[in-house]
Length: 56
Image 1 (cartoon, rainbow, N blue to C red):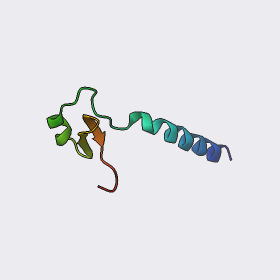
Image 2 (cartoon, rainbow, N blue to C red; image 1 turned 135 degrees about the vertical axis):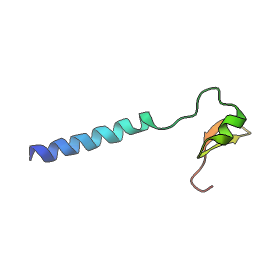
Image 3 (cartoon, rainbow, N blue to C red; image 1 turned 45 degrees about the horizontal axis):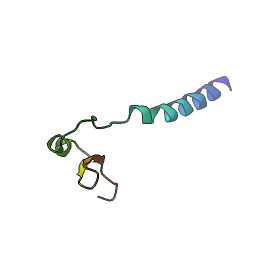
Image 4 (cartoon, rainbow, N blue to C red; image 1 turned 180 degrees about the horizontal axis):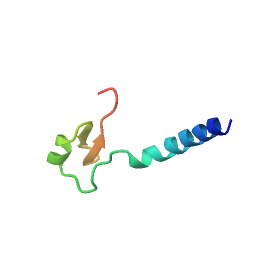
């Protein structure tokens, strides 16, 4: 029973910590650098690099 609780606690801890380690573009990313990054695109309206939406 203790090992099950430990695994559940580990799962919860990982799910909370995972977004902190997600890939984020550098603060001062140029348009050219943004276009080289996979799953990121240059948003003209915001004038910054943003993560592509799942739909395309």
